[in-house]
Amino acid sequence: MKALDLFCKAGGTSMGLYRAGFEVTGVDIEPQPRYPFEFVQGDALEYVAQNGHKYDLIVAGPPCQLYSVTAALSKGDYPDLVGPTREALKATGKPYFIENVPRAPLINPLMLCGTMFPELRVRRHRLFECWPAIWFPPGMCYHWGVASSCGRGKSKKNLTGGYIAGNLKNFDFITVAGCDYIVADARVAMGIPWMTRDELSQAIPPSYTEWLGREMMRLI
Image 1 (cartoon, rainbow, N blue to C red):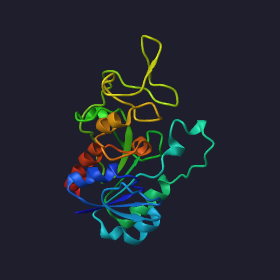
Image 2 (spheres, rainbow, N blue to C red):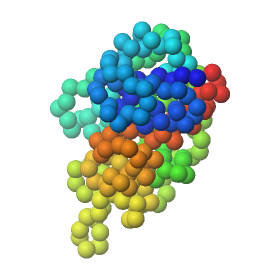
Image 3 (cartoon, helix red, strand yellow):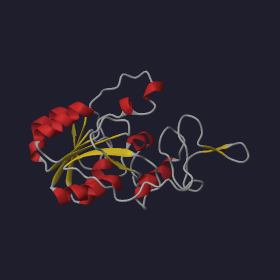
């Protein structure tokens, strides 16, 4: 089966679909030199309108900045693409899922967290609007242990008054956002060994979409 990953970035979502058994093509408006599969640089919505019929599953992660909790702190002019993306995917008649952050306007979304996957050590909530619908996650979101914080400051004040960046020695989970984490440890925590810091901050752990891909393959 073939899957199309729109707004693919460096390929976290695509890697999960590949592990689930799909042949994957990614599309992004920007060059993605570390993307690990067949890649098309171009407008994602234009591409799916012209080529969506060639794929068995279409997935999309439109820009999330407008819906993020930090949007009010920024003066950026961010696009609102969830609605147009949904319409473009529905027009193909193909099974799809749309991924975004918790405040995004998705319909009946499924929430996944790193704590649902025993191989991960990241807390990252992401919503998935799926058609056909998937109602139940693989496990419970359980925020046990100690997680690093995020932001432009430091992750955690230690007993001597200093600060500790997010790492796997001092924390059970790493919050991979902002700049307060060790990249090598974040790669392990998310199961993504090939990405840079900026790419990790936006990525979906492949474990999420491997599980989703298997569920979608069962329904297709």
